Length: 201
Image (cartoon, rainbow, N blue to C red; front, side, top):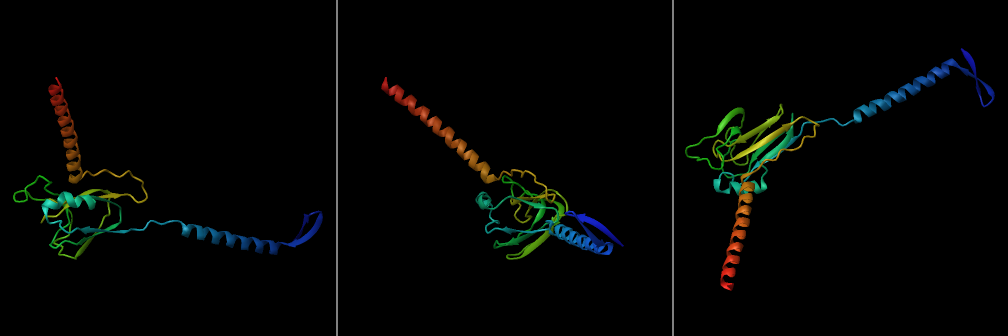
């Protein structure tokens, strides 16, 4: 089928089949661009996080020192894999639940597992992994050294959630020490002023 179009004041004859072919080519180009756009969009993949069990973690007296450089909480997303590696010189467990706390007595108090995950005994240089499939806040401890208390916060992928502040025992001791130093300095200063005031009379 032939028809005429007018362009710049001139009459041109075009074939319908050539127009149809032209539009088909344009359609393929548009489809290819859309396909590239869809596949170029960012896709959320599960990640693996490695958490070392640090040297000295078996020594209760080093708890506050270790917490200065070892995070007590890690934020991950659902579907992420967390791997613990034992870098200490003795065995540990990664057991979901509560420990005995800083003031607990390891001779009489025991860890309180909740059954969500359990690594068993990890010997030095051994590792164990767990996939977190549901969101939430999960505490964990070591049943051999129950004063060890850390946690995993599992968030939904792509959701920007303000991170919770986990206060460590090291931070608590630092705050208490700072308060004691300030109060002591004020008290000594006041006593000194009173002493100088009495002697100047």
